[in-house]
Length: 290
Image (cartoon, rainbow, N blue to C red; front, side, top):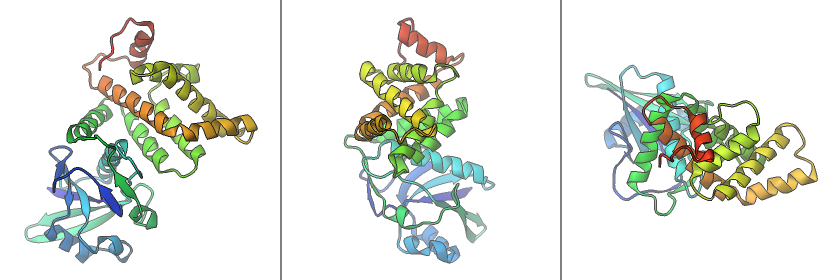
């Protein structure tokens, strides 16, 4: 058994009370234990030493001895997505992980750079994380479980997570809009009338404020199209971008509601037809699953 450790480098990290939080039977958040910390410091490259000198919070993933880099990245992505789903401040990222392996009495620590070969720079360390008020253990565990199972049912969920995480970390609102729109597009099978269908299906998947949600999703996708087609400099587009920026908290709220509904749908027993289900919601011939 190998231990994969994802250090939480945020300067301020406000989470649920208690020394340990279990996302699943193989994933838990705690302070790095003293033995593992000693092993990490013995093998730590110079570039990583700064934020790891003192005992730090981290998420443990209990993996197989031959755990692949792909599996490590996928689990880090899922854990970051779960935390970011409930973030009231900055979006977290895991720029690297540490794999601790044990052979007899000998322990080694191998440092694995993240997807973009990041180092623990100032942006990671200066992050501030706080759970959205009212978030409980069951909420975090539900999103982790549903998303994990949804990935097995539809590989596109990995793209959705990646682009959603990216959208939350972006500084420029134009980049946020593009990443969020791409994340939501992965829920659409059709290739025609994308803006209309996507906005309509997502609004009904939200199960709340359908008219408001439809208008927001429609504006989001229309602005996304203007940006990627080079017309974002026009006055009308600039006004729409400013409107999206002001309403981003609500857009994220509706986006997360739609994603959670989608994951719940993917956790239903087959046969499953997402487009047919969404059309049924619109026509009133299908019952909501939550």
